[in-house]
Length: 300
Length: 270
Image (cartoon, rainbow over all chains, first blue to last red; front, top):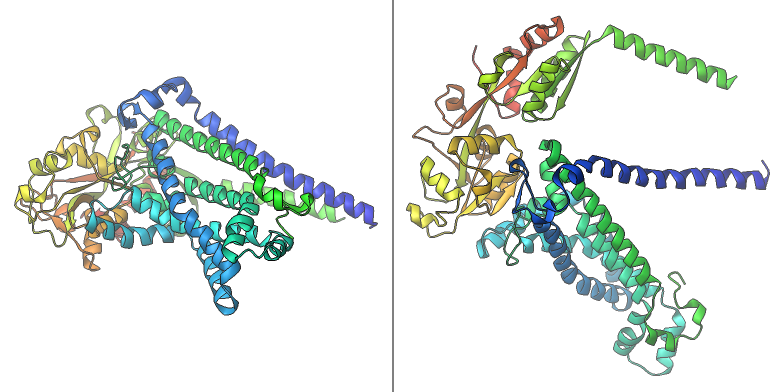
């Protein structure tokens, strides 16, 4: 086989693979839309925001508390995990050396591999009783956010670490030449330069948090009501689908498929925002940049 | 040459499948998702003893089981309740009983609650155990998710509507309910009695409450004295196929009692 025909074969093979990935996503969207059609025709979109509550058996289909639930739990988890994750990434990049650094990195990598159901079970038997003793019922926004934060932490640490190490060596040399101390170098040069990479890390974590099902199902309490404090139970869209899909019929089923479609739209929106963010870089880092063409290099 | 062998193989494979399908008579069973896992287990054992039959079990709710049997789509239906007055056109066979027990934390000093008290707790009229003579502790109401058959039995027994219940936690599986109550000293919930008995035997910190003076035990579900219980049924149309007859005889025999108990249901004495 000549080099060019091998190339052509590879080109065709990869094209088929790429197309099938695109097709699968397309098919999922088509399926979700078709399955949720009765939600548009029988229930009507307005019902999802206007109905008094979510009791599908009694023809009430308000999704608002669950959309809010998904967003609130995700937001609190991100608020907890982002500063911790970036700090840990800085530690990993600049302060952890030799054995400590290597073992810490392995530990974080191990944390990414733990199945979510294990986190959920641990939350149910360890975190929830702890919170229940402090402020009943325990299964709450706080419990879900805590366990989710722990779950997304490794993603933020590892990707931020990658973004920080991708900041060109020359930046650090320039900082050293200007006799900046380490604090100034990290906060005024490295972090702004790694900004887009860190944002991508946070958005990826956000995507994982909003789509997470088992953990939330086990520790959030799943009551369909707008929570008035972090100690109140909450139900997310994903938990709702997992709880009720097996037993849902007709309109109820369509409403659940519709909430799946809603989740897909939400994640698409997040990916879109993420793309926009990662192509923008703050001004002040550019000012120090010695060569404008390498400012956005993720891999040196 | 390779291609020819491949084609021949394909033809042979298709023919093989076809022949196997013809040899094995298909039996379709649909209905209650409470019963489906049990019937799937029974079907597996049935198939291993009767190679000539292939059993296809699909869940989708008791109403689907009834509709499918009436339309002739399924040979046997699974229904997790007794017959309604307009369902006398079908043949009903009692398969097993399922009892639902109220569970609270082991350290809760409450020894018994009556139906009115439980209804008041679940609708939010009583919010502290102290009101009932228990410890000064906020009550955590643990309810089941919409659509679960346990929830329907509970609502029916206490004559409640799901929208009037004020829960603090909503759970899916029995195990999740047991773990939730064991981890919260003020919690009250309800689960399948069989699953609670197993959890208590394993040392889980929950206790089952009696109802109307009858202890919540598998024995009392079996002898019919425990009030919050239901009978799981298999149904067929007026006419039975030979395959359905043989399967029914098997599913209603003591040969499957271990499978019924493994699903925390209570086999019936015949």
